[in-house]
Structures are given as structure tokens and as C-alpha cells.
Length: 137
Picture (cartoon, rainbow, N blue to C red):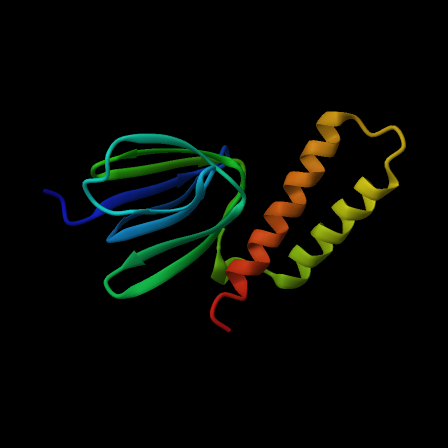
């Protein structure tokens, strides 16, 4: 039986995170999911939110966008458009991105349903970044 999980977070641009961890808490479609080694195999949708990777008594906090997770007994693979570690988050940039997306959404006008969905996801991802950055302040 495995004592750790290999957590991999992948975006179209890069592998954002690839480490062995003791536990992962992720924002799944069914709510916050805690994943330990030897978890039953599972595929789930990931919502924009805060991801917590516990490793050796410490926590690493990341913000993830909407995506999918494949979970096996010794591996958690997350495919998402956006992900960032809390240490790399600039609160000012996240606040500005959120405000810009909210303003565009409120303006409406000739906005398509696809653009409205993308703006809503941008708002959720900005909120996830802010939550991750402010975790345990």
C-alpha cells in the first residue's frame, strides 16, 4: 500500500505541480474532496477554488480553475486551464482581473453565452486566487 500520492496539476502551458503528497483537498463537483493514498479510482469535475496539498506536516496552497481530476490509489492528475501556487499570486492583479470580468459581464450588450461563461469562470478563478493567497492570514 502506498503511503503517498503523486499529485500532478497540468495546464495547456505547463506542469504546474508534480510532487508526492500525503493528502490532497480539492474543490470537486460534489463539494470539497479529501483524497488520501489508496483512494478508490474516480473521475470528477474540478471547480475553480483552493487546492490544499499536505506534505510532511506542511501545506501547500494552490488556486485552480475549472477542470477534471483523475484519481487512482497512488495518483491524482488534475487537468485545468489555470493553476497557480499561493506564493506566486499577486492580489492586486487578481482583484483587477475580477473587477474587469465583473464589469464586462454587467455591461452585457452583445455578449455571447460562451463569453459570459468565460467571464464567470474568470471571476471564480480570481476569487480562488484571493482565497488561496489569504489562506490562514
